[in-house]
Amino acid sequence: MESSEEENDGVSRNHVPKELIRLASNGAKFVDEVLNGQNECCLESFRMDKHVFYKLCNILQAKGLLRHTNRIKIEEQLAIFVFIIGHNLRTRAVQELFRYSGETISRHFNHVLNAIMSISLELFQPPGSVVPSEISEDPRFYPYFKDCVGVIDGIHVPVTVGVDEQGPFRNKNGLLSQNILAACSFDLKFHYVLAGWEGSATDLQVFNSAITRRNNLQVPEGRYYIVDSKYPNVPGFVAPYSIPYYKEFPSDFHPQDATELFNQRHSIFRNVIDRTFGALKARFPILMSAPSYPLQTQVKLVVAACALHNFIRNEKPDDWIFKMYEHGSFPMEESEPQLEMAVAPKMDVESQTQASDHTFDSEEVVHDASQLRNSIAAEMWNDFIQDFPPCKFH
Image (cartoon, rainbow, N blue to C red; front, side, top):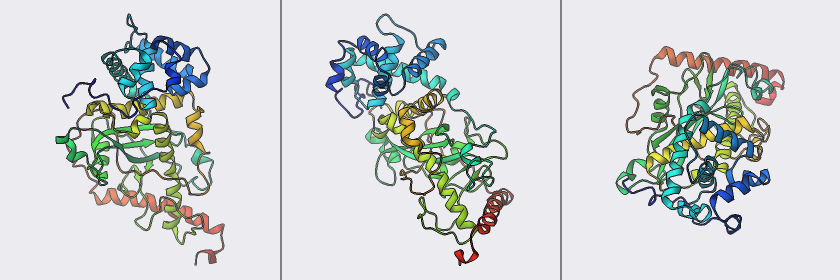
């Protein structure tokens, strides 16, 4: 895409609410009023608590990634960026509030985006060695899933590309998108994100890329992620059995054998990634639209938004958006609404034009993965039938 960022600033909304414009005569005054006002105002305007905002500014300054200029302090630079992605605004709409040219807004937007990308790898932490409390404290999952470290799934994010590039990005629903693969922890953090794959890419292509690329998805030895039926059941990734599988099992469902019980409990885990994506998109609604930035910028935006999501979760785990999506660890009823999902994300931002040839063809490897799943299902079933009369299942 050859057009400039000033021309490519279209996101979704064209106007800043008039009440915000009335708050200040220029951007610096607006930022000062927000940061010196009630914390709720900072949450609404900049999508994070004041102390979280200041800490992020300090980190980016200390690492030499952002610096004060003669006209714009670091706080205002970060405010411009999070205001755009947190309110899904066009650059020219933000000009009304901050009183800068479109070129200035775009320049600082990109400086902050690149600064956050520079620290993003630090914000995607691999799984720890402790069994997540969401598993250890729930008899439905412990001890059976004690080695599970999280959940993997994908989501389509709308994308804007030139007419000559649209073919590969058109997904099965006919919409232009990039496919994002994410590995999430049970406390709503992203372990890993792979962005940039075209919407037409298969789930297996994206998965294979995630596990074979240079900055690949790491699974601790002896541990595994839960994946759904579109992914393979291979070492490090436990998929459901190939029998009827519901994203939401009916509340009156009574499993008839070990495989049905396994699939039922396996499905409950998956709501954690729906809630993680839900919190991400609620905080940064720019991901719900197709921003008219260059493709590389759109890919970076996904990774940066996920990194900021993790930073805020670390610093303020009980902030208002996370509270909306927590609902306890796992609901007893499998009725959590599901997001439409399909693909995968990436840490390093590079063109996704080559499909990985990596496959798990070894019979021994596939057998070992099946054995693990079978042992979990058998142990779970044996305990389950002791608690219910046998006639319940016949």
